[in-house]
Amino acid sequence: MFYYIYQLFHYKVSYLRLFRYITVRSVFGAITAFLISILLGPYVIRKLKELKVGQTIRDEGPDTHKGKSGTPTMGGILILMGIIIPTILWSNLNNSLVWLLLFTTIWLGTVGFIDDYLKLTRKNSDGLAGRYKLIGQITIGLFIGIYLYFNHPPMGELWKYKFEDSNYVNYINGHYTTKISIPFLKNTLFDLGWFYIPFVILIIVSSSNAVNLTDGLDGLAIGAIIFCMLSYTIITYVVGNWKISQYLNLIYVEGSGELTVYCASLIGAALGFLWFNSYPAQMFMGDTGSLSLGGVIGLVAIITKKELLLLIVGGVFVIEALSVIIQVVFYKWKKKRIFLMAPLHHHFELKGLAEPKIIIRFWILSIIFTLLSLVTLKIQ
Image 1: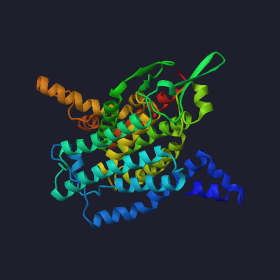
Image 2: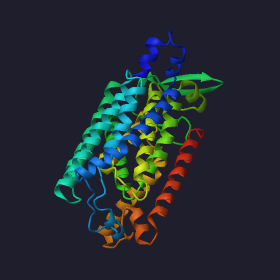
Image 3: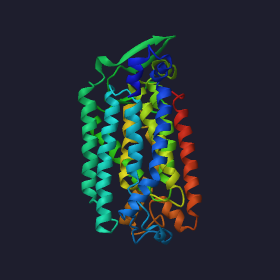
Image 4: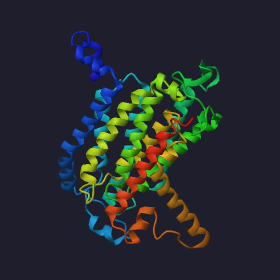
């Protein structure tokens, strides 16, 4: 909205020209999102308590979690409002990539909402059957994959090379490609062909579920998401800026710079939610928040052509997901458990570490992964 106010009235009010800059609108987006979360947070908590929308704790979980039973959940609604409203207010809504992110946010948020609602109405931790949840994730992943594959033609003649100082720079001018870049390797691309579509589905499903698995301690997941999105806020701006991407020898994706506003809004909303979700939590995000936030992290990685870098950016989520996979596979193979309990954060709980200490240490790991991911932008 403010972007259009600038277009209509900047010749009359000179300071409105500030709204043409992505960086300015991103900052205001983050601040708006934070204020929405902070101001609406107490009201949302109060309403959730009135509706008796409380967390159901599974029986096989750590004993320390029993006291959390009844804590308001579905706080992801607050996060989604904090993302969607500022994005609409501060973004250039002529950008189709912005709408793709918003649609994915709402879709996965709805899947998570149904899961949370069923958990509450059934008064157990089962919720939506895993296969139906997976169908919802695969459906949006398939839509994204097909949209990018067919609406943005494969590389072919659209892949351009520009020679400057004997070095060529690759960029995509508003088009997507079936080729993916390899972190740390200069001008190294791997063509997936038609397999690009299932590859997109894999990223969306994996990132969505990985964040969902990490959301087990007060503030753990949302803190890791903040650091993860800090990295992608910088990446979206860099790959969406021709001069900077040229200097760093990165793929230039036209229009992706506008996603900086969305990423910044997500950070602001997440910080506001953390205000209430920090230990001891007054509210949980539930699957409404974790499934949608995990999915959009994967989508941003896809749009910026940094799909494989997601393994570093979301290192904490990868570790948590791997701990579950390793636990299940090893138990089926040897009938023994490697960890006392999976995901990994529960293992450390059962080892006797205090919950706040576990949370802070995982945040530290997230910061390290964020720094490593940003270093890769220069190592090409």
